[in-house]
Length: 81
Image 1: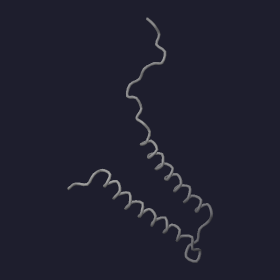
Image 2: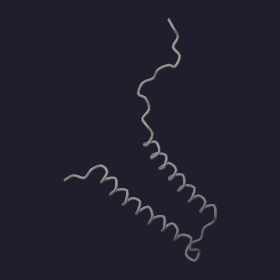
Image 3: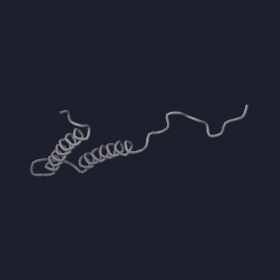
Image 4: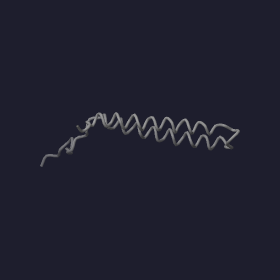
């Protein structure tokens, strides 16, 4: 039996979010100053790019929830011939 699109979404979402959480934890490990040397601008850059990607991802889901736009165009005011 083939999986439904909902089942595929759930399977992939769980796998990808779990992987992202793990990778974020690994990024957090970089905070250990006994093993790594970094400055605040590098830390700010890391979090800025992560926020930017999260915002872009959120916008994609928000756009998918909105009703589709009309496929045709009509002028609001038509001039009479």
